[in-house]
Length: 228
Length: 384
Image 1 (cartoon, each protein chain N blue to C red):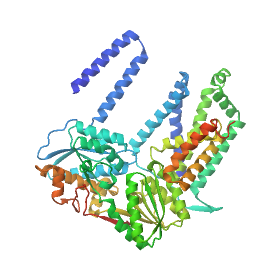
Image 2: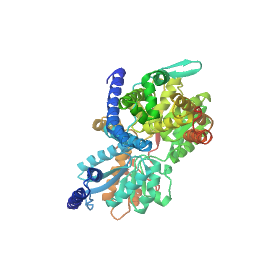
Image 3: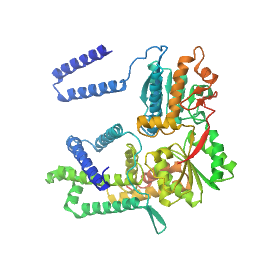
Image 4: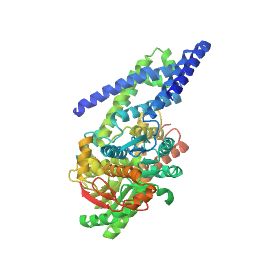
């Protein structure tokens, strides 16, 4: 068994390679054919399904755990494990890093320009393909980090991705699509609502509350709580 | 059949050639080629087992198995399959060939129904599985429609919903749930538990266990301060909050039934909070401990399980390199009983034969009642 730091680096490299292949040979071709956002989303769901199935075939569908200690620390009345502290810390660092990159660097400005109007960006001779690829690889690095820490905190199986993806989408809608900070706030609100549902109502109501909050937000403030 | 496939392929190739001459479009060819590959792959992979069922001879038996070989119930499904394969090998020593056609229902009740349909199309009248109780409930009408028998190693009749006449077609490998009341009440008294929490998956399984444990708590004079249910996909994220809530209510004993992911989340959370009250669970805590997914540490972990034998566990571990879990031995025993019943029942129905005597298992005998439950085993609580 390899040490966690080496496994972490290898996981990022392997996932980055896979992400490059997807970007280069699937998403870029779909964009070249002027595919709509729905088509891109369905394609990525298809990839998710295939990857889940391949992982289950190669490694079985059994629950797996990653090496992670249950050693905990207490502070201000809160008890957390070191892994959980690392999870929160890495989320704060990741959001800060992404916020800085997007708002304070030329790369971030170019990326936002592409997101806003890709045709104009191409006309302006921005290196669109290269920027998209770099953004994909950065996203993969963040995703792998979160996944490894999540696995160390609990357990994983080939099928957990869909549920987490759904919760991520709900969080982004609640906070407001288009800003990573809004998404973070949306995630905190969603988690609070779910935990409150478990505590005050019952465990079976957790997912019901999540979707009720989503519907409420879509009815009252469809752009999201924070987005103007 | 192979000639038909070759003929169909030839026609498709001719069609492709004709189309390419007419249309001269590369994309049409690629589309057809992809369809052929996918359809052929689907056909060959889902029919990789022996396609026809030969008539039962004195020494050859054909059974089916609709099991969760992937998805949430993969752990039990795999244990049942492995137990069945061990029985197959043992029967071979007796000169009996037991053919088993496997169908992976991916823990999806709709696919469990499809699996029963598939077995019926193959002429199979006895199956092992489905795996989890709600899958059995979903497949039961089809089992009844085709008058099949289902031998299920990891359930008892009280966790399956359905008409009594339909349920009589099921044979179960574990003791009825109500029999957990007495050993659980004894455990509660021994542990000195005054305030108990009952945490279970939702559905019939959870309802039955909740009712039995409430009775056990009442018999032991303990107060039930927390009863909560959760659906199994969100169990790993729901249980930690429930553990915190139990601690805030000064619960000094927990009884739980759920999935392996839930067992891991629950034990980890309790260790994180240093909340070391006794926990009694079903099936997965010991498994998670045996496979190194949880470390016991200072936790007081117990499991309630049916009769099992060290000899079977040792044999299973020798062959598969891992602990058998709770359902491999009942699955083995039921496979042996099903095979011998098929060969020995004569003019009796399967149910009549099963009720007529006690049946030999690996290290015990099985006495069934009219509900298909084994009534001479009972439950025991072991410390993990």
